[in-house]
Image 1: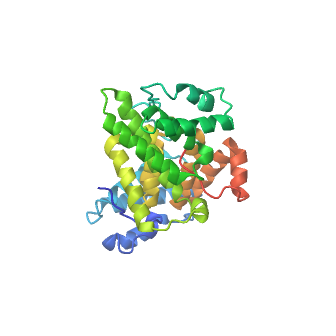
Image 2 (image 1 turned 90 degrees about the horizontal axis):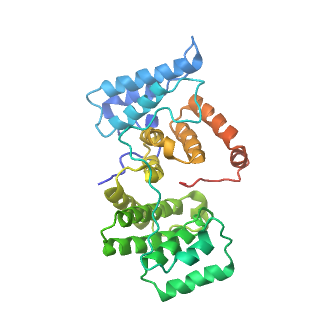
Image 3 (image 1 turned 90 degrees about the vertical axis):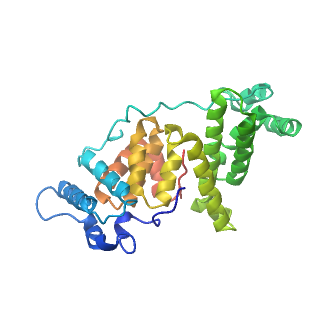
Length: 322
């Protein structure tokens, strides 16, 4: 079972009540620039020294150790002034290649409408969306129709507007795929994608700008639903590059920014470049690592100047997952 092990704040601020006997050591983990030598290199070396010292302590809680080890791993791999738009290390050889979501349409009821709505040359019209509504009414228990309905709802431009509806549609489809249980691997993969889409929709649901327009009435119930959806995904899919951004999001919610950063880099080759660069920058900021965060921000702004400008002007209030 996954538990909320740490509050949502940078690890180096969390010594009181968490690290017990190592509070003094943790408080010194964010040493500032030393008086001699290259400032950035000195800062990194000081960080690494403090982290190594903490990791050597037998009294360090075991649930904290992976977080500190992840922070140390990233700092060891980082050379000040040489950060690029690529991950700091290559994925492990055992990391499976991402697999695209399969289209499941056993009765072939949704194919033509899918091409009109979402095909490579699609130019959807109001009549097409009406046709989808009618098709769903006529065949509410058809997996292909349900999957098309979910895909239509779960487009980037709709995720902040209809997160609850997307989550509900995904839950319905996931249940149908589980009950079908055909001897086809693509059904299992389609279900994993559907569970991811549900967890992602719930994660969008709690974004500040979404909550502002759609307040969460029962926060305890919502929290249980989100964590339950994530646990269900993990039980089915484990750790896969296709779904890694929800892992990163959930680790960030727990204040485990080092582990989130490590996982982001582990799968960075397979993540959309914009999301990789933006989330790397955000995680470095959340860790309080100002110097590498500035490098990451410069790289992100150079690669995606319009998005960076919109952020700076306050036009983008919060991000999503992918």
